[in-house]
Structure formats: C-alpha cells, structure tokens
Length: 203
Image (cartoon, rainbow, N blue to C red):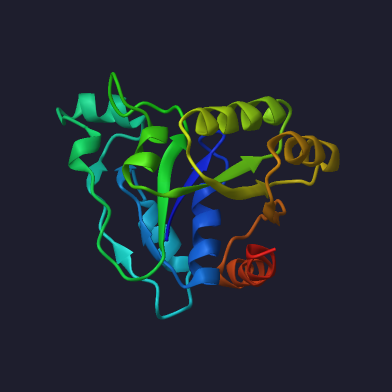
C-alpha cells in the first residue's frame, strides 16, 4: 500500500507523523519533492530504529525553502506531475507531501493531485490551533471532491477534545493517533507513538 501524508498547513507535523508510520509499519519512505534543507528524508532516517525501512531518493531536490512552484521557478526547473513516479518496492510506502493539500506544484497542479497520480491513500495530519477545524474540514472536502481515499486523521499538538470531536463527527473518519506537543523529538518518542499507532491502525 502507498500512504500519502498530507497536512492542513506547512507545520502540521507531517515529518514526525511519517517517521511514526514508518516505524510502526516498517514501511519505506519517499519525499517526492524536497524544498530547502535539512531534508525531511534525513530527519525521518534519524528517527527510525527498524532495519526494514528503506529511504528512496527524492525525485526533485530544490534548494530554495519555499512553495514547490515558487522554488522551481527560482531555480529554472519545470515541475510537473508527469515527471514524478513512486519507487518500486514490495513494502508499504510512506509518501510525504509538501505543505498542505492545495500547495501548488505549478500553475495547474497541486500537492493534492499527487495522491491520485500515485494511486495512494491519504492520511491527514491536523495540528490543533484556533482555526484548525475549518482548515481540516476544508482539506477533507478537497480530498473528497477528488475521490481520494482517506485512511484517517492524526491529531498533533496540545489536546483539544471539542475540536477533535467535531472534526471526527463531520468527517466520519477514524483518529489514527494523537501526538502531544513534544519539545524533544527522538527515537524514543517515535517508538512510543509507533506502538500506539499499531493499536489503532486496524480499529
């Protein structure tokens, strides 16, 4: 299976969630488009302890820390979905997106379009802040409009039970994991949440 990790904003916690998913599922990892450094691949690699996960090279590496379409334009690169192909692997594959669903790749394509292009299932990471209900439900509406299957939601940050309740009520999705606001992210933390995710994965 291919799982595409997208978020409701740039700092939703996609990379941490991706590391947790890789550890829990012993899945491979791939970041199709990297803009800026350090790379998310290196970050996830530093947090994984299992020996089965393989890290596939990025298809596009941009030096400019900006939206993919803007970074590509600065660097004179023609960024297009047709040039992006997921790596062949018999293992589950975690694909980490860039920014939120409607971050543009170019004048016509968005991050959300990669999910269908890769025939992947989405996992939405929602950080909890004032306005996150709106951003989460709008992201899910966009995914639904494109007939993208969604495995579930990962909540990230200080718990907000009412926000979580109303999001799950209207989305009718399963909460895969709740990640607290962690000030030190290391392998121990990733392993802790990976064990929680295993329990929730098939509920």
